[in-house]
Image 1: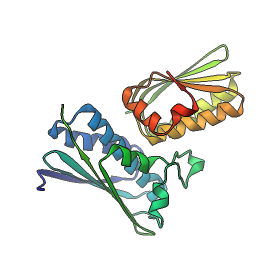
Image 2: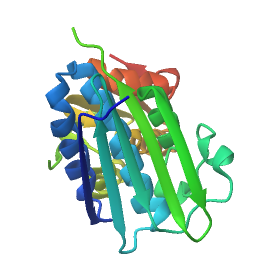
Image 3: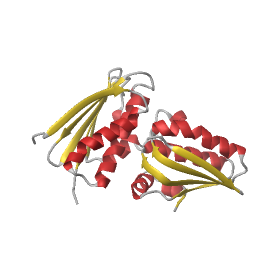
Image 4: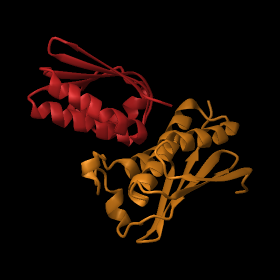
Length: 142
Length: 103
C-alpha cells in the first residue's frame, strides 16, 4: 500500500500539547473525509498516546514527543514516540485498569481506549530508552 | 481548548457543569476545585453535567472515578448527566455505567 501523504512533527512533553497533537492529527486526516465518529475515535487515541508519553514516558519532566502520520487511500497510521523511561512489561501495561500512577488518579484505560478506538495498535518499548506506539485507523465514509 | 467549570449547590445536591475538552491537562486543573466543594458543602449527591463537554479521554474517567470514590466515602452518590454519544462510548467502555447512573 502506497502512502498518499505524510507529516512529521515534534513538540515538548507539556500537557497543553495534548490538545495540539489531537487537533493536528484530525486536521491532517480530514483530507480523507472521515466520518465525525471516526475522527473522534482518532483524536481520543492520539490524546491517550501523547498523555502516556508525558505522564509515564517522561514522568512529567521536560522531553520531546515525536509524532508521524502517514495517510493511505482509506486509512491513517499514527506513530507517537518518546525517549523517556520506557517499560519492561508491555503486556501488563496493556491490561485494562492497570496503572503505575494511581496517586494521579490514572484510570489505567489508556491502551484499552487506543485498542478499542483504533483498528490496530503496536507498542515497542525498552527500559531506559523510550516507547513507540504505532496505530492505524481505517475510515469508513458515509 | 480550556475547560470551564461552574459549580452550583442546591439543598444537598452539588452540580458541576463542565464546558470544553476534558483531557489530562484540564483534569489536573479542576480536580481540586471539585474536591474542595465536596468537602465544604453538606451535599450528599454529586451531579456531573457533561452537556458542554466536546471531548474526553481516559483522564476524564480518572476524574469521574476519583470524585465517585470521594463522595461515596462521605456517604453520598454520584450521577452523570447529558453526555454526548461520543462520551457515552468511552463511559460504557470503561464500565462507569455500572458504577453510577447516567442520564
